[in-house]
Image 1 (cartoon, rainbow, N blue to C red):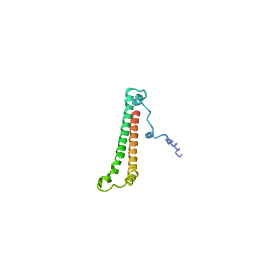
Image 2 (image 1 turned 135 degrees about the vertical axis):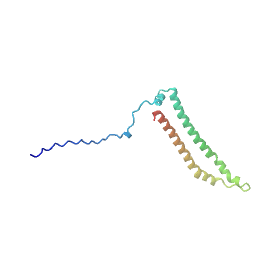
Image 3 (image 1 turned 45 degrees about the vertical axis):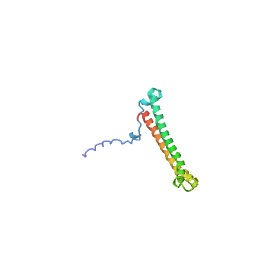
Image 4 (image 1 turned 120 degrees about the vertical axis):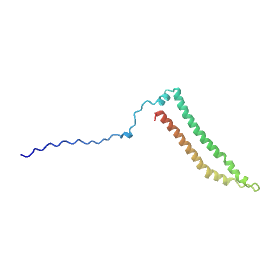
Length: 134
């Protein structure tokens, strides 16, 4: 008599996981002490907000100082040709004025503004990280 065939052991069924990867999951919001301090308007919360306001004011005053330095030196730049040649009549300041305003000042103003915005955003990001407990 031929041997009876053995029943094949069933293989485990393969399943595909379609959930969000663990690295993409956010942890549940736990107790964020800074957030509760701010929302309850405690002295510590007031200190956190005042700290953010101080850092934003520092950034603004730095940008304002750079702007004042930049614009304040324009009259000196325009007086420079007359100071370099004291015996000769001073040339018309208009070409220097247009060159200073059109070529030199606008890119510098853009750089000052860009630096200010980046610093203000970094201050807010740091504050948000503090409040959310990151």
